[in-house]
Image (cartoon, rainbow, N blue to C red; front, side):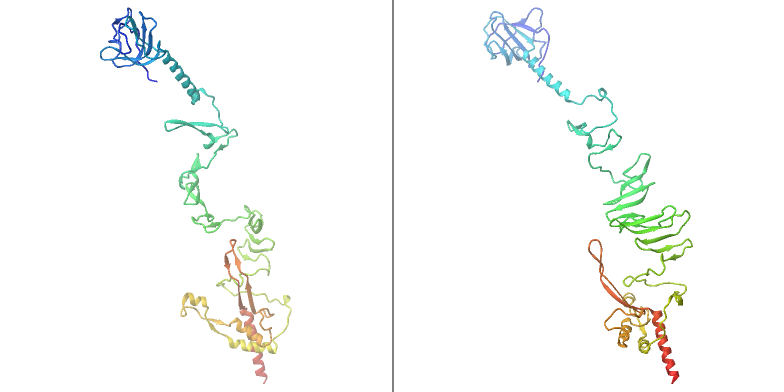
Length: 440
């Protein structure tokens, strides 16, 4: 609502009539004239009251024009039912006043302002202090040119039990190992940071110590390719860690651990449900966990080369054997024929890797040829891969798939021989032939 011009004790007499402008003719005793008091063309509240014709009156908004006349711009109330009055000529007064309607409008505006102020955020100095937030609390914040209320739960706040609660996701800057995005007030170089896309770095003392990625957990490695990938040494101390249990599908599958005796540095590895298959003693020797139970490697997963300062020691104690004697005539014949099969060969994978000229030449037999000779001599059944001669070996393995169903090892089989026993078999056959020749 525009504020009109106000001035005290401005009242003049007038003689003119009609509905148009009225010319003031002089101040009423004790009052001032419009001229020199009210700026030209500035609106003010006016009141016209008839003296000769006392029943005529009019209140409204008007102004003093350049000729010094009262121009009646808008009528607020009048003796003509609120319309402009056609004043009769004769003495009347013109006064600068305040219209009752303006006061009413002002009261209405003040009431609205009072209600609006009541809805505004009060001064914080007029409120009680609390140390905890509660569910449903809101906070008033500035948004553009206005104000809005947001739930306190969208921010981190401390509740009655001292827990800092956040009602939505927490988004932090990436940070670094030296300055983690999430750290501690008294230890700013220890905490979590975004190492790369889809990975979290764990820092301590300003250096990355562990990384969690979509592929797994890496310690000492930035890109683990297993669920747990450790680059570097791992210390297992039996006194501190009596057992480490590896679980598969909720069942303990592997156990690694020592005796638990303080100062005992030995430990063993076992497949749960079986005796320990590997043990390291306090003397540093690597031993099988149980005697004569487990193999090293199998037909589909072989060791490429075994390095040793001396040859293997095989048990030959008579107390552990049931003796069956020397070779039969058929076995002597088979030994003679197998000896004729001895020759040089190269491994196919060595040729593929090194070329025919680079692959080394080995000496021995072809296992299937030995099997065929033993079959032809009637010593084993035809078309069998199972026989009683230990120097003849055949192993098969099934197809293996990973947890997602992909084939990681195809089914297959492989023939083999035990060289030490086959060599002794050939020596015995050769000796039998020589004895027969000497007897002639």
